[in-house]
Image 1: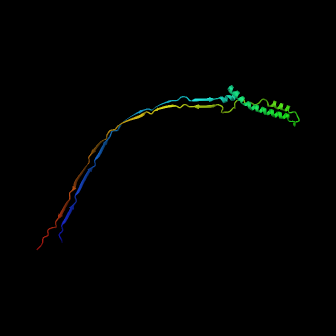
Image 2: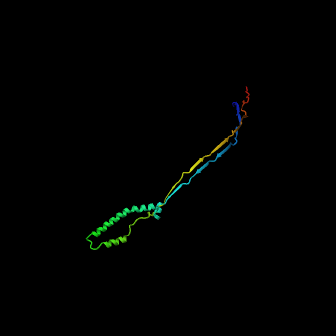
Image 3: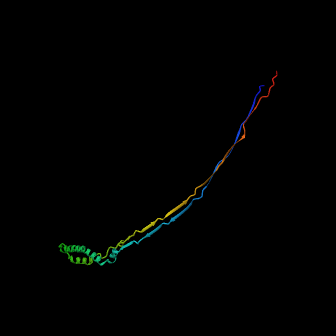
Length: 189
């Protein structure tokens, strides 16, 4: 048998303990002061102007003012005179026509009696829109003082503290090598 050397090794073991560092931060709330000034509104509004024109309504109901009444009648007389002249000419032509065998004068007199006086428009025309209404609004005078907001903020710096951690390294098992020599062999001579 061949002698052998026995070698045993043991590893070294390192132990590590650690605790992380930590921050402690404290900060007080800011102090805020808010001051507001209310807006002020001043408004002045004069009443508007209402204009009602009932001239056409009065003309239709009672003839209106005397001057307008007579002007309306006189304005129609030219047409009445023209129609009367045409009628006189037509009646004269009927009387002078020798082809007519009977006397036309009684017929003309009867027509004149039945027709009566000329139709004159004494009153104005009656319509639903005779009364004219007009409203003129006045612009309101509005003045606005917008007011305002004053903000004063007092901030506080943060209080920061750092608590250190640690790292501790130590040997839990030291390394070693054990060598065991072979047993001594006696040689026989």
